[in-house]
Length: 200
Image 1 (cartoon, rainbow, N blue to C red):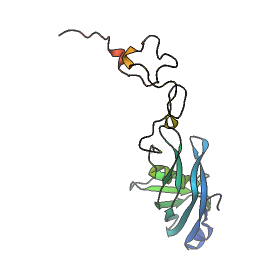
Image 2: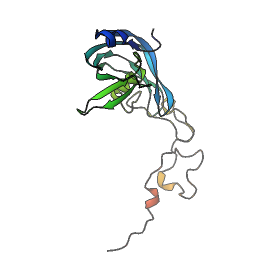
Image 3: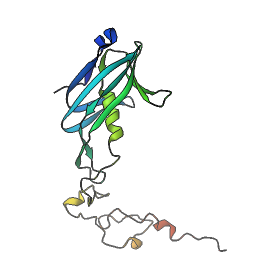
């Protein structure tokens, strides 16, 4: 198991020979908004990377990455496994003054991975590629009932004391939801029923 996905490009920069790396990851840590984040995987995720010299300080990275992400169900927050099969491909540029690798957009519209350390950590690159391919939201089951918005009970395990017992229109708008009698899902337009519109 590899803790950090790295590829060593010292020989490539000196002799223009190809460089390769492979391994398996059980998670990825990456930086976002100035803090370290973690992507969790359900099982070891294999990756293969090869970098070819293009001339000068430019090169091309290609390979594959097959993570099975663990995401939260959008309704009940249960773990959901999301398998991905990613094909990697990006231009690279070596700039010795760069401390932290980053992606920038080239004039052609393609993204370029700019780096300064020949011992290149691919964590942020793989994380960004994975997040771009991942769905924005997932459900652990199509009929997921979600959580009670009052007490947080998982409604997939059965009803709770806040399940609706009176029609929404009987809810006192001034008092809000009566505790212990109505599930928190109220009609968002209830406050408009007394709205007086000007007559034509």
